[in-house]
Image: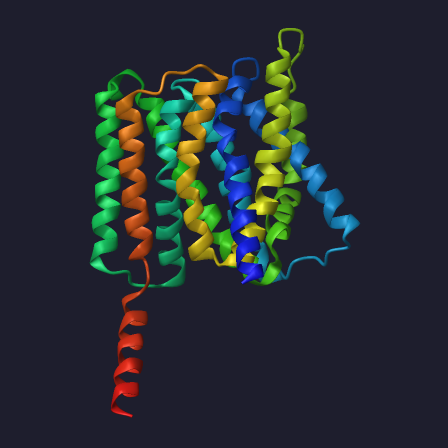
Length: 305
């Protein structure tokens, strides 16, 4: 029981840290090039991760885990940060956070695909309904005015969901914080070269708030948040603690309103709540039907005995 409670606390802290990522990225891209921001944050986090792995004398991952670690790196180290940074040049962080409500669903879908499970029909009902709500919201906000920003956010959610699913699978035997650390270290040589190649000619126009935002997304969003997140998944269970992601849009909208003074319309809040409801329903019915059938057979056997 104590371990499960600790898992929920760690998972909650991870989600809380992740909630500040989009508002901080929004501030950073005002003064930094999105590509430089993406590679620089990954390089900084990769150096810190390497120090952690060396300090704790962690063993190198097995050869069979390398491919999955590359997928994690492409999803959460490169893909999601780059795509969201590009998207936030076209849309507000409050608008983008609505899409984050689909992240648990994307993670669940890739978990189903990777695990070969067969969810109930109700799962797909909630999935389609949630996607329709997000698409409808984008249209009402003027989808044609910034289709690039909305499409980039959708792509970011897809690659991040894949990265989360692979990371959750690896954390079962590789360890929680070790997954993101090894993914960052694998990416470090490429991120370091790209950081140097995209290095700005001058930082004179960079505001203190942009520097603080770069530090936040580098240290907390890319590393510290994952330390709590994967530890929570390992301690409290991936399916259970993973539902805490549903709180991220609420925290993100609140941060966008408080820190960036962005307007959060009643419609935006209503759609976020509705999407979270759909994702919660989809997660509830994500268990494979074969598991349900097996449970039914076991109970029937007990009744006969």
